[in-house]
Image (cartoon, rainbow, N blue to C red; front, top):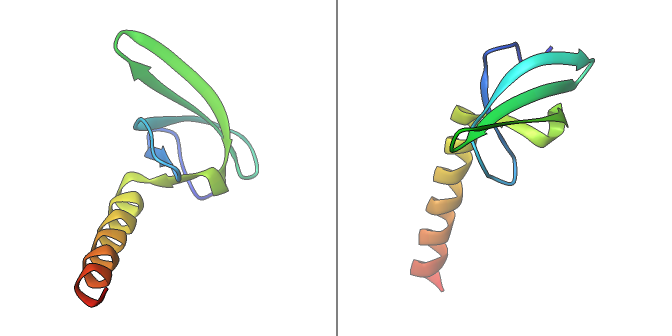
Length: 73
């Protein structure tokens, strides 16, 4: 089990911060998130979501690569 209820995650493609609500089955999780005062929920495969820390680390790496490419380009 990669995630547990209460973990803060985000889709690998970005978007809103979500909370793991429940594990549906092996590698499948129900997430909830808010947009203004509306509660949203959906089910995601574990490959579609990452922890917020992992996502931030990915963004920093991507930003660094962009800066290097600008300097070399």
